Amino acid sequence: MSSESLQPAPALCRRTLLAALGGAGLAATLTACGGSDDKSSGSSSNSSSDASTGSAGGAALAKTTDIPEGGGKIFADQSVVVTQPTAGEFKAFSTVCPHQQQRVNSVDNGVITCPAHGSQFSVTDGSVKKGPATSGLTAADIKVSGDSITLA
Image (cartoon, rainbow, N blue to C red):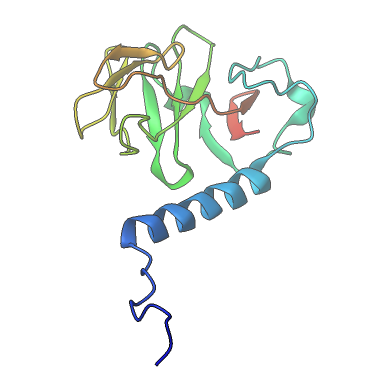
């Protein structure tokens, strides 16, 4: 008999495996969507006068007329919510709630809401308006060219 322990090696739990796979998928998505613009500093506000970049960032998410003033629209497939806090000003945020990584599912009356625990975020800057979340939504980069909104 050897003196080595006969206990089985610990198995990966499902949560750890899913977190690792999700992280790898997010990294791949961010790499694919990342731009080489030196001016991308996390700001999600882009002027509609940036016509030179057109659709270089990817497929159009929406027309500017699709985003209601004072509200927004959720693009679940791209994990982004685009808002129009004031006329002609467009912002974008991740749909992932920082509280427990659930997805926000509605934008109404200037508020983005997570259904899981009721956290609410501002359409203007993604900041927390109501917890339990303690940090805001992560900004996403978009480009507005003419009447087209694309991921940067």
